[in-house]
Length: 146
Image 1 (cartoon, rainbow, N blue to C red):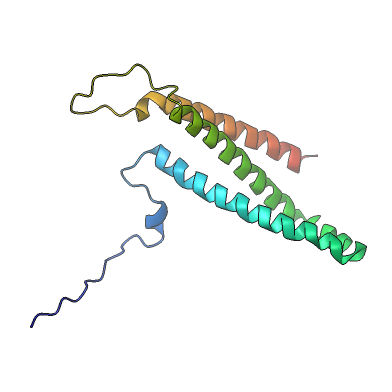
Image 2: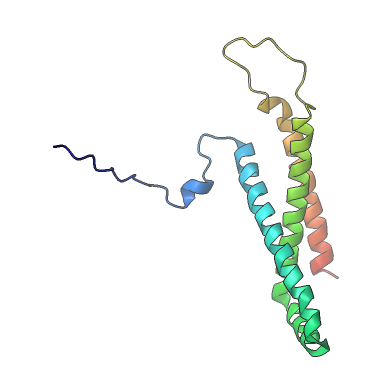
């Protein structure tokens, strides 16, 4: 009687395999960044509601919490939140434009080997990400250099 023992999967990449796109393109990394920034923004919203609810504990508790948020570490966290919001918004705008069919060019007859539409809207991707980087730099300058 033969037993079918499951073979162990050799996970060579470990956690790196979750984010390593390998043969995939730049858009794959944007996809991962969009997901992570979305999760970060949701976590911020939950923490913001908890922080605002702290106001019900009284003026002293509120002042102590605001004193904690005045530490330099929270300036960095505030910038990361800002950067995540800018990235998420700009990448979402890019996705919306692509899904609505802009920057895809004229339709072509589907003849094998099929041409990918990714290269047609790749310039839009670069422009949007450069604009996001510029906004992040400008926002960082106003946060850190008052």
